[in-house]
Length: 133
Image (cartoon, rainbow, N blue to C red):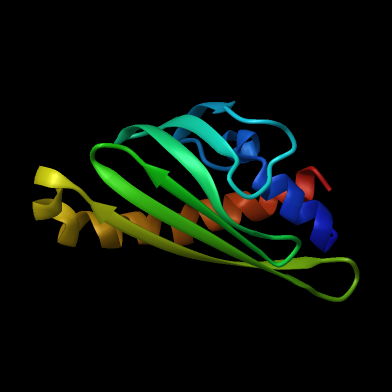
């Protein structure tokens, strides 16, 4: 998928359930199209309801989501790079900070979440982008 289209598709968090089965009920809470400051709400298993804000929007190269709920703060940054033959490479950085009592199990959960993202979510995102090219 060309760079700009891949960026726009990922920026619209309503597409997330197509590659992340843990995400449901994604709703846009501000104006369309997504841009810096756009707010979404979604449910993500197993940690519950999140308010998600686009905290960085440098189209078409960098996109960052800041997701917060009472249990955790999750920052997901996508870096987009154009490759040959109208393909796009996407590098993802995931930061998870647990809040309150969840802090005590953070050392166990954080690596599990990262491994899950790398082994399942990354390939699923690639597949979803290819299907919607």
